[in-house]
Length: 398
Image (cartoon, rainbow, N blue to C red):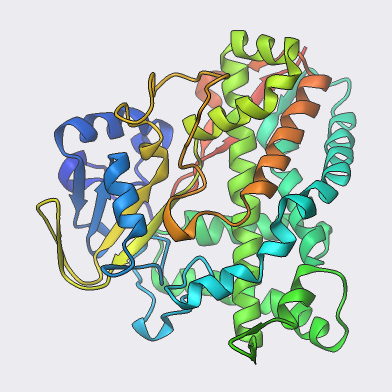
């Protein structure tokens, strides 16, 4: 069930509130100038820093804040799960985090990602060919949501035909945070039950995929347990799909809403990589969470053990003390040291992969549909929770 409406953003905020979901930017701007670290008693207590410097400081402070849970809900992962956390490495604390992250880097390196670009581009063209002749298209449902499913499924060695099931897991894990724990745990159980046969099969017959790589990996000379492998695969599946799906959709939403920017990218296709960075800054999809490890006073805020901290990297990217014209999209913004992929040691290991998918998706979309616009801005629907992107995006592509 949805939570009650927010009464005061400084003392009662909720990141699943309809107003926040529809347009969080004015909320962050107001808080940043009046109450830069907001608080709510919801979810058992959550703090929300909105300034870049505060978000960066907490993201880098592993002494007072733990990553063992990164999705705010009514349930906190048991302390016994540390230092691995629920889904290593994103939920891992030092020193375990570095080793758990390091094993993924070879398959997420620029060279490895470059090898995936031809098949990604071919799939985008296949999707667009299927839309040929249509005047009205849903940019989220018909296009954006499919691209990361295919890429991640191929990398993990999972059947792409299960894409609807993957998206169901994404919705249950990331958007169903207001549901009772008893309902949420069922989603996690179904996810791990789905993945377990694939993990066990790779142990007996390894293939050229990421699951096989993990099954054969070690930390401190010890093989990974199948439990660890399953949790990391779950992370790659959920995070790899939703973040990129959301970023592609938000980029299409912006270009459909701003004809000047769309026309410029059509005229200057070489600008797309730089524009992708700016679209990531302006519409960063991901907000992460931490838990307070031990009582700490942060900027006058009495944070208690197991309080949540909601690290809004999108809010950091809109901080006018860090970015000139922070609330404007400047396609040729350089330099652009945005926080869309996080800050601190947990900065996204898959950033090269996400960039490639977003860039290719936009390049191919613009080649197929150089002129498009929103059919009804009020009909656009955005996801709730800590990953924000359009889930319904009706476009006129004539």
